[in-house]
Amino acid sequence: MFGTRIDVSAGGARIRGVRIGSGPPVLLLHGFPQSHHAWHRVWPVLAETYTVVASDLRGYGDSLAFDDDFSFRAMADDQLTVMRSLGFESFPVVGHDRGARVAQRMALDHPHAVESVVLLDIVPTAAVWSGMDAELARGYWHWSFLAQPGGLPERALAADPIGFLHGFLGIGASIGVFAPEALAEYERAALRPSVQRAFCGDYRAAAGIDLEHDANSRQARQPALVLWGARGMVGRGPDPVDVWREVFPNVHGRPLDAGHFLPEEVPVEIAREITTFLKAR
Image (cartoon, rainbow, N blue to C red; front, side):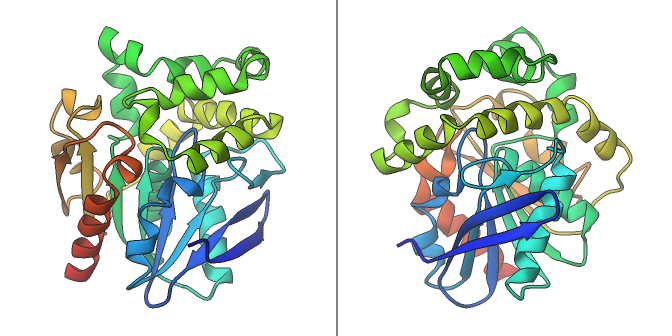
């Protein structure tokens, strides 16, 4: 099930993805180092009830970035433009990894557009940096590596893009959890210098301007569902629900028996959790 392709100009970016199903809208946002294909095991279930929009973040997958703004604010604005171009003025947002950080920013910057959020396997960006002990630094080594200035990470990625991709995908999961067709899509994208630039730009922003945006934001009013992998890094620190309550006071959640890549490891459970949450709203 591939649906209808979408291709939308959004200021400093061109966003591509798919639209599937009919009914109320829901926006699905992928994480690093993936593309909208991360949801390929989830969207067939959701599309039975919802109009599912799954798009690539700026610079990721088949989307293009025309400037160097890889902040979550810019990414959120892109996705709002996509949804409005499809005729959707308000909608829930489901995000995994980097996509969940974009969902957070969308909820804060565009409260009238975002009805609710589902955040998969993350805690707020500032909480990651402030809690960066030796264990977390080893697990999240790419946070510091990709944020380095001067083009060093871009040169390293260009030298062995597939090797680095497999290393990134091995953080919190076995490479075997990815369907061959999805892995092929991630590999195809990772070979593009523009995607490698987006990887680095994304993490540089998360070490700088994204922290400023978050520090200057008020709490979000939307209901939020937080899910994380019991075998991943997120649950090893303070309770993620308690951490997220500082941003989303109306939040609940729980761990799932998985690693980091929840949409591909436990897609049926993720689809059920999303559907239950959205119906309750």
